Length: 322
Image (cartoon, rainbow, N blue to C red; front, side, top):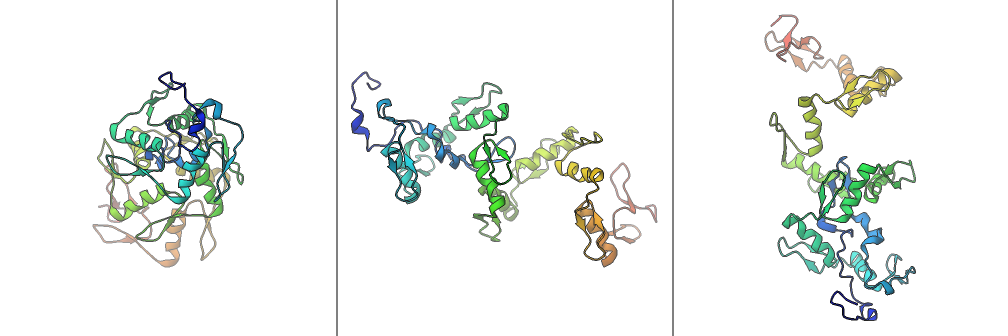
């Protein structure tokens, strides 16, 4: 029976597309390359392997067998309509267009989800924190933040991820694959999201501003880190001595005090250092470079140490006491 109570024949749907809301399919809502709350890139393309978005035309037609195979890649499907949609990933066909911005999609469900960007509709909500989402797929990914579930693991190093898209991007670290390139400087990147960030170096765009001091940043993650200066938040703590730090990188450098690790070595004398900045300061002994100078007496220094830092954060020379 259909929604009007009329009898329908499932057999006539065999060559038709599913007309359900494919809210978890590839290209859903065009939200690919968006960072999640951990700053990781969410690649919606991983939903292509998720069977829950392929709604059957009729319960009686749904079978456990995948009788329909793709001639190009060999992937198999339980319904000819799903195979038809899949084939568009090879042909590039996108017959469904958005009336607002003109963007095209491979099926009607993806276009429907995309239109919610324009309407602002977010019908799926988290029961824990009340955050709302455009697609059910986004909600399911988000819920793993609360549950801690990371069902996708790397075959090489064992690191686990909340969704297949994150895993897919991570594996490129091991393979060395960098499929995304900058059109200006030809630098290559692992994810499309990295390219978007990188392009702001060329454009100078800094769309994220600090509400306290007004400083602008090229991405939201840098802004989040910067705000710790104002809040005093130090979320990274040393397990050995308990000292806390604003940044994860600062904690990593600090841990080398306890471990004795000195991964940065001088090419001239071989002396090791805990950080790259320490090594660079040391190299000036060999090169004679003195990039710091006193504005009053003109004395030059190889490091900033002779320039004392008083409470007003103004540099003055310990030689001339100015």
